[in-house]
Length: 175
Image 1 (spheres, rainbow, N blue to C red):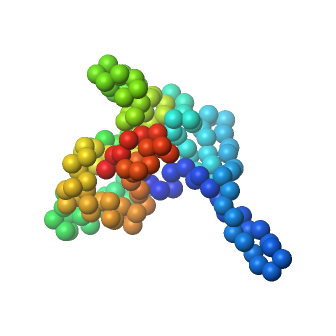
Image 2: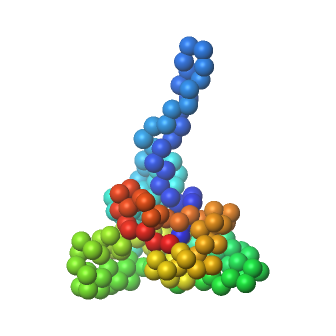
Image 3: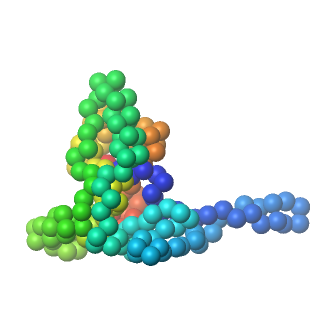
């Protein structure tokens, strides 16, 4: 799960004036910027994915705003008798390197690339991404998983790797 303001914008709107009306057109060209620290932004949003890496020394820790949003979401879920918790938050470059290598050793590179980011390419390194409870498919069928899927947007989060978007995200579904 990832705060929605960190998700890559794949389109931006432009107004085009026709003869009698304004037409809103979606283009596939957000403004890309790279700062002096090697970070990539699209329209002011930090991007990290299989194409845009973070520097190995980028290590902000857990983002305070994201943590506060999660804490509120967790409290609201608890009020309903649900138990959600962060099973994986901020990961350093080195931690991700070891995790990715263990997956490669166990399942091979092609398989690992479907469910684990290479070091420098993990959104967890931004301090903005959280895995909740478990990332197994069974989570989606729990009361907690259903509640998170239905309500995470209210707290500024998204399900980052939806079931039907592996061709877009490059990663298999994570509930």
